[in-house]
Image (tube, rainbow, N blue to C red; front, side, top):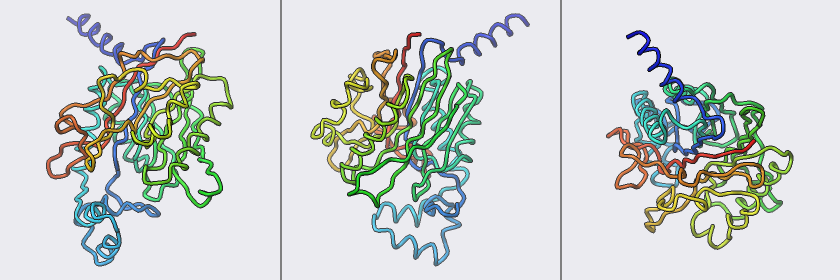
Length: 331
């Protein structure tokens, strides 16, 4: 009996360990994953318990917000510890549904700080995760990119987007690079959260140029993943991703044939692939095309459409679906 239990335990552990010749990976914009504290220097006043939103100063500040949805969140959204913890549990459930014991590496967007990332890591650690990282960027709301990984994360660096002169006064979230080592190969990962679609298209063009410049500084295989914020219409008119195909394999160009997109626009009832995984061509990487998918379960969707977290019902996670893929590499 003891031997049987031991073998069962070893089998479970072996399932949690990454496969040596492939890498399973996910990108997930978790839409405003904040803690419940008011961090100095951040515009996080919407993500506080309702009990802390009663002051005249807070109400006056919220009433200056021009967008009605954001103004109402600032005034009435009750972001308690219980709500935060429930959202974290929902994220965990979605991650573990993508693959048994979860993907090897997960890139997140819209995470406030290392504290709330640590909370999520602690929920995932029993499934083989060993490292997590977030470096504070310069987003005025304090939303950053982050990683949780079954491999140690090395040489963590934020790369500032270089804008052309017409956008010299603009700023955006930097590209977050980490490196992982598998056998004798170093892989470079670039976590992306480019300027939102309401910003000029030229800002996203400059962002892609910055990314391309980074990939030319080394000979390692590389992966860029995250929220590129290129809508379907922009991608078609600009030929954004088709122009990148000489350098990259792009997740929804290679597979995900039954996927509708990763973000749904209610205003015109349309889907866009804002979120993607892109891998380097000619550096030993290929997609397992059958593995590429958006991850949607009851927890994070309503009628197969992504739902942001609802504090009253405890349902939902984000207005984005995560994108998952398995990457095969040769020595």
